[in-house]
Each structure stands twice: as C-alpha cells, then as structure tokens.
Length: 310
Ligand SMILES: NC(=O)c1ccc[n+]([C@@H]2O[C@H](COP(=O)([O-])OP(=O)(O)OC[C@H]3O[C@@H](n4cnc5c(N)ncnc54)[C@H](OP(=O)(O)O)[C@@H]3O)[C@@H](O)[C@H]2O)c1
Image 1 (cartoon, rainbow, N blue to C red):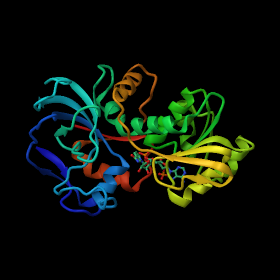
Image 2: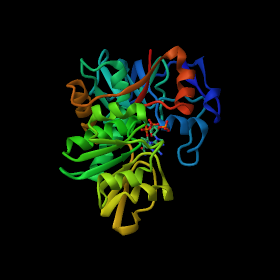
Image 3: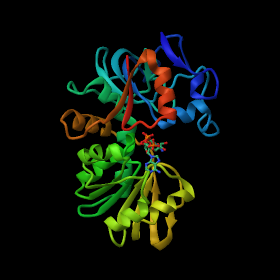
Image 4: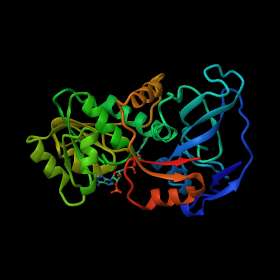
C-alpha cells in the first residue's frame, strides 16, 4: 500500500509517498481503509524528533494520529466494530493515518462514524475536539464568566471557542483580521487581532479587572505569564502545553492534553453530525498531495483543521 513515510528524524520535507506492507490487525486492533486523515502539531513533533526523548518512534514511520475510514478487518477480541463499519479514531503515537490502510488501536479512542458526518469532518474531529473538551473540563468556565482563548483560530481553538460558548460564558478569541468573521460564527462574542494588538491589554479592556478564564493554546512555560496577566485575581488558566502551576495574583493553571474518556468521541461526533459542533476545515489536500500538505502545515498560516482525503 502507499503511505507517507519518514525514514529518519528530520524536516518534514524529507517525507515521501512510498510502498510499505499493508498492516495486519493483531488482538484488539482494527484495520481501516483510510478515507481521510488530519494533521496535528504532534505529527510534526514526532517527525522532526522534537519529542523523541519521551515519545520515540520506529522508522520507517507513517504519521497521522487522526483517521477515519471503513473497517476492512478486525483483530482477535474486537467486538465493538465489524467489517464494513465506518469509524473515526484518535490513534495516538502509533499514528499511521497517512496511508491507504491504517491500524487503529481500538476503544475508547475509536467510534462509529455518524452517517451524516463527512470523512473530512470526521478526520478533523478527534485530536482537536478531544483536547478542547479536556481543556474545558479543567478550566470549567461557567455561565456569565468571561473567557479569553489564545490561539482560537487553530484546530483545538476552533473547538474550544464553541465548547466554551456552550457553557454560557462570554468568549474573547484571538484572530487575524481575515478570521474575525469565522471566530464570531463559531460563537466568539469579541475578537482581538494578535498580530496588531496587545492581546492582554485588549482583554483587560474587554473585561475590566480581568477575565475569569484564559485558555492559551500557543504559549508554554514562562511565556504563559502574558496571557495569565489578562486573568482576574484568583482566575484560572488552562493549556495543552506545559508551564507553571500558578501565576501572580493567585491565578492558578492546569495543563492537560488529548483525553479519551469512554463515550466522548461518540458524543462529539454525534454533536458534529447534528450540527451542534462545527468542524472548521481550513485546507484540504488529496493523499497524492500529502507531502505538500505537511510542508504547508509546518510553514504556512492555516486556520482550523488541515485534512487529507483519499
Ligand atoms: N498536549 C496534548 O495532548 C495536545 C493535543 C493537541 C494539541 N496540543 C498543542 O496545542 C497547541 C494548539 O494545537 P492546534 O492543533 O490547535 O494547533 P494549530 O492548528 O497549529 O493552531 C494554532 C493557532 O494559533 C495561532 N497562533 C500562533 N501564535 C499565536 C499567538 N501568539 N496568538 C494567537 N494565536 C496564535 C496559529 O496561527 P499562526 O499561523 O499565526 O501561527 C494557529 O492558528 C499546539 O501547540 C499543540 O502542540 C497539545
């Protein structure tokens, strides 16, 4: 089968489409004929070796943690899925989604795909929506609280804005000038241009005294202090990257990542299928164009999810 293959750690430009053996499903595994896959920051980190000390990979390596397609074969002990089912999955570090066939590691990171959810939407959902939901769990925005979302125009951010808004909170989202309408459509009450404005100062103008919650998707470590300064005394910050557990003025911080509590992917997929959760697809590529998709994702500004269809 054809796959996008990395032969060693290095720049994304080194990956090529190549023939590799079609995987065989072992116990608990499901083999999927891939219909779509989506790109995520973790793909770049695994390919380049940025996280190789704690997340080493074997080469040749096929990236792609988000995948959707048709079940082609099931391994021993799999009862949730049958041949012919359409599923979507978060495949984690084993990855493999950028190939004609993908080995999915099974529950609870896989779910049946609702009939009305397109392959592209299904691929765009798992990592970003699961991570956004985990951040909302931790940040616990409440009705009438004010939430600043930094990095709102990206994959995770586009879901954070929608899920935060659903709690009844008011949302201020960072956006480039040409993304303001998009962020408002997703539910933002106001936007701030992170390229031309001081986001913290603008947030303090929007919420005098500070916002209740900051969800920052772009900064890590001490660099989170800028966004934390937009929070009120005793406010909360949540991030999928790492940083200090507390900031000045009693602002507390929580860090979380992609989580797959049982049933959550099904719920998110159902919400998307019913039109209650929008999967914002900023760019689509065909599988034959996957090398260019990866390079664009690494080097260009793209909003929402970058999806590859087969
Ligand atoms: N821990 C986990 O399990 C986990 C899971 C998922 C994601 N993450 C992390 O979460 C982060 C977001 O993921 P993602 O998939 O949403 O990435 P993404 O799709 O690349 O989105 C990031 C967005 O933030 C924007 N941005 C960059 N700098 C900004 C700034 N200073 N202020 C406001 N916006 C800014 C980017 O636009 P530009 O083009 O302007 O840069 C981009 O639109 C990544 O760092 C990723 O590694 C962690």
